[in-house]
Each structure stands twice: as C-alpha cells, then as structure tokens.
Image 1 (cartoon, rainbow, N blue to C red):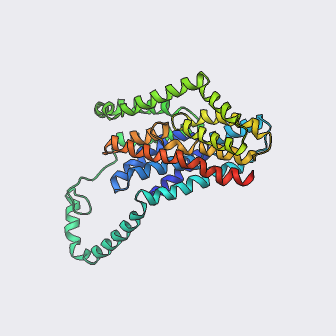
Image 2: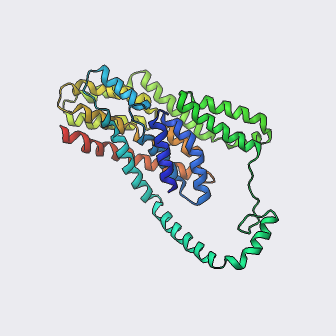
Image 3: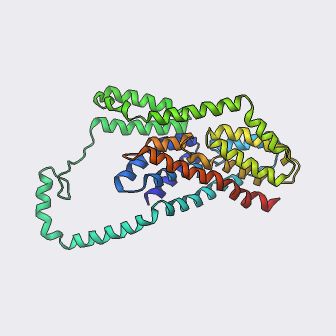
Length: 348
C-alpha cells in the first residue's frame, strides 16, 4: 500500500494549494528512500509521487486550477471547475497502469509470503524467547541481528522539525520551496557540521545542469515568440478537431521540457479564438488541454521528473534517466490523443 499512500498524500498536498514541484520536492526523498529500504521499485514510487501530485493539481483552490479558471474567466468562455477534476480521474488510471507495469503486483505476493513466514516464526517463538531477550539486552535488534538500534538524536529530531516547517510554509504560506529548503539546510549545518562535508557530493549536479539548461533554452523560445508562433499556425488550420488535437500535443511536448504553470498560461489563450466559434466544446477542450500539459511532468527534463531522478538511491542514474525518459515519451505520445478522444471528440 505504500505507493498508493504516497499517491494520496501527494494529491492532497496539491489539492490544498501546494504547487506540484513543491509537493514532489517534499515527498520524493522520503518516498524513494522508503522504496529502496523495502525493495520497492524506485521508478514506480517516483511515478506515483508525480502522478499523485498532478491528480490533485486542478482543484479549484490549487495553483493550476486558479490559473486555468482565471484565463477562462477573462476570455468570457463557459467554465466548469468540476471538469478539471478530469486530471484526478486520468492520473489515477495512469497510476493503476504504472502500479501493474512497474512491479506493484509482486508486492502483494511478497506480503503474502511474509505473512506465511511470520506464522511459521510464531510457532517457534516460545522456544526462542529467552535468546531474543538476551540479544536485545546486549544492544542488538529485537530480531537477534547485530544491527544497531537507531535512536532519535538531536540532529535527527531537528531535521524532522525542519521538514515539517518546510512543508507547512510551502503549503500554507506559498513560500518558495527552494528558498525554504536552503534556510532549513543552513540551520542544520550549524547543528551537525560533520554531515555537511558529504552533502555537496550528494547533490546530482548533472541533473541540475541538465534541467537548468533545458529551462533556459525553452525560456528563450518563449521570449522570442516561437511557441506562440507555432500555436497560432496550428490554430489557423481551419479543422477544429485537428486543431484541438495538435494544441493538446503542443502543450504536452513543450511542458515536458518546461514549467507546466507557464505553459498553461500560454497554450490555453491560443485555443480561445476557435473555442468561441462553438465547433468544439470549450469546457471539454480546456480540460483536455490542461491535463495534457501537466501529466507529462514525469519527464526527467522537467522539474518534477528531475526531482525524482535526483533523489533515486543507490541506482545507476544513467539507466534510471533513460527509463524515466522512455516512460515520459510514451506519456507524451499517448496521453493527448486519449484525452482528445475521451473529452473533445464526444462533445464536438
């Protein structure tokens, strides 16, 4: 159940107002660490974090929901906030596929085998009771192993407090997650200076440079009007259904390399002229375009995917990057057309 617990928690954070990268930044280190500890696929856990964050991302009080509803209101188009919960349904269905495809079902069998082992161990517990107690008194773990018992030291307690403060300030006060994370890290350096020595080496600098470069490049394209030019060219084709499909793909492809928040504000206005003609349902089209532009955030070239990649524990980062990139390519290719078929075509 751990992947689904993470999925629900991520969705809850974004639904109450946290921006998606903030929710992923808070949960990804915890989720992937737990996955590594309990033998769960880290790719599965990372995808559940991102899709969970996107599932709750279009509630009326969320960042995405406010952006989309504001653009629609300014354009005097008919709106229906409930339609944006299509993101919840679609990302949940995608999460089911991800759970099955990336090792979720064997977790159920693993649980069954563990229960069988526990029942077998209980049959012999009375005979082994005294040695276990003696081992525990000597400082061993309760299962008789030689692993030391982890204790809550002051630096660890302060770290947990810092994580709680980080989550609350980002979710409740909409403060920048990067700035708050740096403040928490700065406070921790004064408490445990020895741990700081290895902190710099633990940063995935290649991921930082990759994402920073891609975002800069896409930002230049937006600034000189390339994306707007492509969008206007698509909108002038004259075939409403084809235009709707191409705009969904435009939003998905560009968002895979850039900020979804910025793309939502740029692509939806491109659809307004032909939505006013009434040949395509405005509510359905906006919902399809919105979800197409955000479900692709699993890409390692976008912020959310990069956070997942950076927090992978004890894995081949190049292999993990390729698998994440291959999955995001499938999502970019398939998601827009599925949303177009499910939402836009029936209402046209």
